[in-house]
Image (spheres, rainbow, N blue to C red):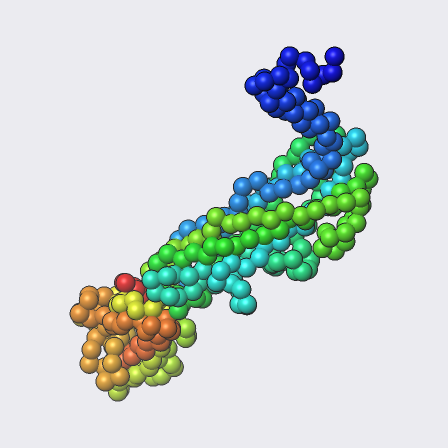
Length: 339
């Protein structure tokens, strides 16, 4: 009796059995397919992200990593992989000399870069960047190995034009290329050829983040205020020095000077082998506004929108003191920056 005349193929039962046989046939075909497509591959596990946390004009470094995975499901006892990792520019870095994060509310940028080394000498870039971030991996038969590739970030110091606030860069993507062989080997310079074969896979970033502090830096940029070598002064002696202050744009601040180590009788004093020599410090060239630590006696300023460094002059005066004993005299004054 022909198979089509079998009762199982009659009436409503025929389509159901045909579908069942078709499903069995597909399952049998899939069971016989080789695993060559999955035999020797590498991929990135997860995404890349880096958070610098709080940064200021001194810059900051931070470290993250990318997890890569390679597998050997071939008949080879061991597979040797040669891998190259590339990280392209994000949405605000393309065409720029450095990578950039943005503060959306103030539309200012914070420059940074990514490196393959902790000394920040080998920048990470897109395919074509030489030398690439390169590393080997050896995987035994039937194994899958994962490892971490450290990524070293650096926010460059001296960025005083960056406004205080949150910064970020998204849309940073990268590529992992790999080549493999049954014995130790070296792939081409960019891991695009060599060995028995290879491939590449792409990955994305969860974001590069930083928060720029509303912080300022005060530094003495000239020599100590020096009244020079002089006999006991019969007339007043004047001298100046400077203090440079760097703050984020539009930051209001004030600069105070304490009374020094030897203050007495309403006057600062320098101490020496012959006792003391009186002097004072002022905010104005006419030397009428004494400089102190209180808000009313401090130098006040608001940094410009470009975040430029402000140089402040300190005006010193030694009043006439013909009775002073010759010798070397000095004092230490503490500078306080409040913002």
